[in-house]
Length: 259
Image (tube, rainbow, N blue to C red; front, side):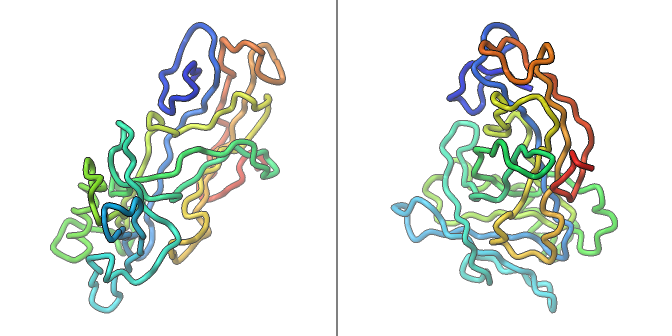
């Protein structure tokens, strides 16, 4: 929980005393690749006068293991794009709309939507089930191993707004996470009444990226929100945060509070 006085600042410092203008529920989100091949995306633009890059998805060959190495060689057009985020905490190229999170009622109604729009994908950690995934990336000289080393060091062309290409992705058995301290890793719950809700994180919600299984693209947690003094909603002057309690976690499901 974070009480903030600078509502225009997406990464405003939390305040512990005095009047707050908003209450933010901050959290870390993460996405794992548990599929049969790497998630690999190439961005490209024809020149620096074009502000965004088109993005194509590339697929590893099931015959010889070859992996396309460029936008031109990538097989699948997507409806997403990449843009350079100049904010001090980023200053690299972002993939648009990869992930979204919402606060929902137990019945599935959306109350609060995120304001985050861009992501820099790379191999940030090994997944919990990496050891049992048949296609898990290994540090070897295979095409997947070489790509894994690129994605492990990927910073999405940091400090290079003039870049014409960018590579993003997640290897099998690896994940990409965004800490609660990152800009816009929060939902504004200032106007949310006391009650029980779901925080839902959805990846590839518009299915513009091809997957073998879309059934596990949403995960959720059930939380309880209680404003001080048993109040139904926030007071006119906010000086204390509501109590927020984690009730349960529901990986791979978009409903949790009603279970």
